[in-house]
Amino acid sequence: MPGRYAMIKDDAQRIEDLDDEDPGVKIADGDFELLDVSGDVGIRVRAESLQELFVKAGLACSALMIDPLGVLDAVTMEVHAGAESEDKTRADAGTLEELLVAWLNELIYRFDAEGFIGRRITVLEFSPARIATAVAGQYYDPLIHTPGLLVKAATHHGLKILNTNNTYVADIVFDI
Image (cartoon, rainbow, N blue to C red; front, side, top):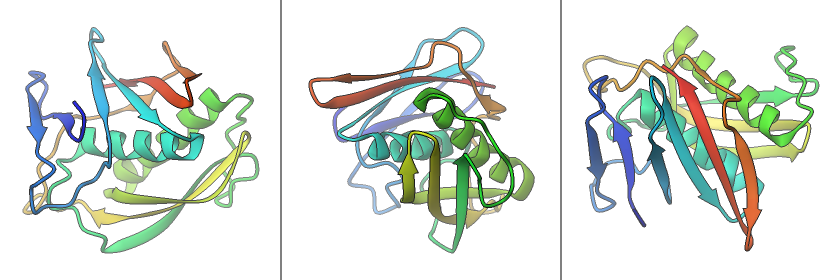
């Protein structure tokens, strides 16, 4: 789906294409595809760099939880994962896949615990053992935002990050 992204809108797995020409906020620049995963939801993300791959995966995760139209850059917060995270949570990230899962789970935690949903992500620091990001977004408001799936966690199930012909690809399964 070049130039488009898809989002699961409810537990009945109804998929709605969101048009790039909408005047609303484009939460993900580029593609993410939904994967057929029994009982959970999977996505495939493609990017030209590892940093871009992480950003697109984070934005796709956000789009699964909340319809991205209407999410504004009202608040910015830092979200870290990996070695020596600033918020003192430590997710030992021995591989890039483990770092990606740890960071996505931090984003999910921010939504679950604080109601914060991101729409724009800037990488502040990136290494194979750590990622630090500034996430701009908004706190969930049921009068403004349309909820999507109840995403519980990013998982290691089937997770792989591949580099093929200078394109990074990640398949990520989320527990719902």
